[in-house]
Every structure is written in structure tokens, then in C-alpha cells.
Image 1: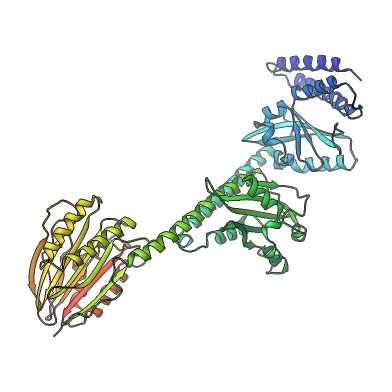
Image 2: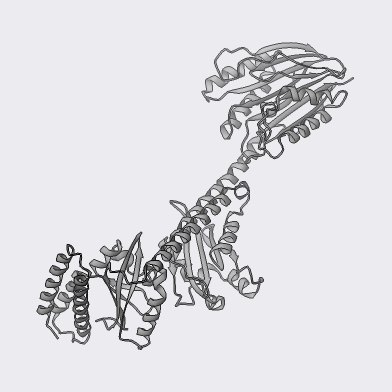
Length: 602
């Protein structure tokens, strides 16, 4: 057995020869040096193992030197425990795989072995553990961080100083020598990897479409839908634990589709996440974990994994960029290929998508609640009884996502009569609702002193300009006294007049929208309403809506509908407009829509 000085000299000579071979294309020369490297490493490992038997007062200098030799070896060396977990690596291993020791230590080494080589690795690894072999050498392919290397992998049993149990040393001797008959197999492996990557990409695309679905935002079903998709495509069991009010709660458990809901699923549902060590670890480290070969049946608490007949497990955080919202755990049974690093990367991305979807859904619910609250400030709860008139109105928020709209209408008392108004802000959201509320309430207040709706709208306009909101409001208002109606328009569509004889005509409309410029004067006109004549005011959401074919509803179609409503009360007129509009748009998304109808009683 050579001493330490001889090992140092041999290591130095080997490093020099390997440097020379970088320019030597002959494969036989490379193989000779690789064999020499293998022999040197075996000698070094035996020397390391001998250090275990030294007494505490042994030569500390030699132990330190051996550690330096291990780090400086010009070939990759990996030390694993009996579970296949990486415990130590040298500098050349980090260079080969493209990751620092801090990242690789603690991970399962089989995940670094290409799928096509894993069966051979497991077979030799198991034989070493059972004492059937003292060492094994075979060709394998290592893949990590987008890199792939064909190596001669040498496994040896090793007793490490300071370690209570035996270790397995893996020496990866890089080689570019291709064995005969392997080209086709390598091509098959590459094709398999490409297909697996394509399936992962398709799964992520399907999940993204699912999370962006309108119902997933409107209702808290995103997590359940995602769990069902993952259970159908990539896992046998899917478990989701979500943080609520500071505590982790188990919200979703998806069992294998070919099994009825039984006692095992109920046990998993009833087992709290606090009893699942793997969930707690993910929550603490805020990073995903993959167990390709399960050796601990207590990771999910009790004997759950054993009852499942689990073969591999994957657990990732459900998170946004700055907050953990829960933990997603996937389990595959023993008869399926195990999870790998590629699956871990995919599920970590899915966990981020889920976290963002849950954040969006909560934000949408808050905005929806705010919409309902603010909408009460711009729409009357009920229409008043106006002497001498029949009144009906309708408002639809639209078929898109529930948002705070900018349309409004109102009917209110004025001096010696009644007033009405309809309008819409050029925008949506809280600001649009607040501006429309300002216009509605401002008009109500000013109508106490103003006899003309045009003057009231002019003052509302100046107040809106002074507030510098940057938003415009199109509005039409009218004051009715007896059979006379004074109308004012600020950039709004003209009112439609349905006459008792069946004719339909429109008022002038026009004017400048409120909030556009200070001192703007609305367009005004006065009309006389005969008995049975109906005034119909409508928003741009009606006239400007489009069908699935891209046609615009327009005032011509509205005229046709009104012509068919001769002699009908306002409620029937409004309903006819709604039904025709629904038939016109079909399933095509349309904006919010408002209609207000007043008929002078006979």
C-alpha cells in the first residue's frame, strides 16, 4: 500500500497526463489513463477507509491531506449513504454537473442518473448493499442543469471515518467512447426525453388555461380543478393544504380515479397537515422536495404512504413571489415511474401559478364585494311612484367578469315635478363608480334650486372639472312638470320617443360630456308628451354592443323593437329591449347596459 507522499505524486502525474490527453484524439490512450485513474482512486479510497481505524491521537496531518486529495481529485467522486442520498462530493463533481456542493448534497443521486441508466444503477446499488458485490462498474449517463455526460460509473462500498454506517462511493469517469450498438438506444432516450418535456409543457398550458377561466376567478374552485387535472395526468394522489387565518388546513384530497371513495381517502382528509413531516419541511424551507425512492413511510403521517403503496412523492409550496399560501403534495404508486427533477421543476412552477391564481381570486372577490357596495350608491333600490307617469328601468352589469361599472340611472323629485337621469362614465372600477355617484348625487342636490336640467348639469360639469378626476361622464337628464318635459344632454345618445300611433322619433341629444371642459353648456330642448307617449333612454352599452358576427346593435334595431311595442306599458317595453338584445348578442360578451322608460298615463 503506497504512503501519502506516493499518492500525492501519483495524483500529480495523473493530472498532468489527463491535461495532455485533452489534445490527444485517440480513444485507447484515454481509456488507459481512465483505468489508471480508477486504480488511483481505489487506492485513495482504501486509504480514506483506513483512517476510520486510526485512534484519536492519530496523524491529523494525514487526515487533512486526504481530505485535500479528495477535493482535488481530477475525476468526479460522489459519496452516498445507503439510501442513495448524496453526502459529499469533490470539486470535479461540481464542475461536471454545473452545481455547487451545497445544492447537490442532500439530494437523491438516482435523480442525477438518466432514466435509461437508472435500472442498472439500482441493480448494482442494491447488490452492493446486500453484500453480493464489493464494487461494480458500468456505463451510465448523468443529466443535470441541462447537461448530459456519458460516464463509466464505478460503485464501491466504503467505511468513512466518523460515519456510523457504510457509505457508497461513486466515481464517474467521463468518456466519449461510444459502445457499439448504443447509437439507436441513445436516440430513443433523446426522443423519450423530448416527448416527456412536451407532455410537461402541455400540462402546464392546460393548467394555465384552467386557472384563467372566468369561473375559476368568480368562485373558489381553482385549486380543486387543478388538483383533478394533476390527478388525471401525472399523479395517483393529490393533496392540497392551504394557509387560512394563520393555520394550515387540508382542503383537497384527490384519490386514484379507479378507486371508490373509501376509508383511506377519508383518513388522508382527516389527517391534519401538522402530522405530515414533509408538509412542514416544505413550509419551513419554502422549496420543493422530491423523494424518488421512498424509504420513510411517515412523511405524510402515520402509515398513510404504506397504505397507499406509494413509490415516490413530490411536495412543493403554493406561493406567490413574496408569500406562501399552502403546500401541494403528489404521490405516485410503486407500479409507475418515479418523480424526477424535471417533475419537481414543473410542479414548482405550477405551485407558483396556483398561488397567483388564488391571489387573483381573492382580489376579485374583494372587488366584487366592493362593486356590490358601490353600485348601491349609483342605482336606486326601487323606483318611486310618479303621479301621472308609469316608469320602468333595467340595468345589466354585462356578461364579462363582475366589475364595478360606470353606468347609472335615477328618478327623483324636483321643484313642482320629477327629474330623471341616465349616464355612463368612460371607464370602470372604483374611480368610475365614485365619479358617477358624484354626478348622480350632485344632480339631486342641485335640482332643489335649479329649474332647468341643463343648468344643473352645467354646474355638475364645473365641479367635476375642478376635481381633476380625468374622467368623462355622458349623461342625459330631464325635468317633467305636467305634460312638459325639459331635456338636457351632455354627450349622451338622444332619447327615443314612442308615440301612441306607433311612430318612433329621437330627440336632438348631443352636447359635451361632463368633466371635459369648464363652462361647457349641455344641449337642451323642451318637448310636450301626449297621453300614452313613452320616453326611452338607453346607454351606449345597448347601442354599441356587437353580435358574434361583429354587427352593431344600433339605433335602427332599437327603432324596430320599439315599433313592435306600441301601446305597451314601460315594463313590457324594457323587457322587449332586453330579450331582443340577448337574442342579438347570444353568448358573445357584452358590456353593461341600462334602459329607462317613462310613459305619460292616459
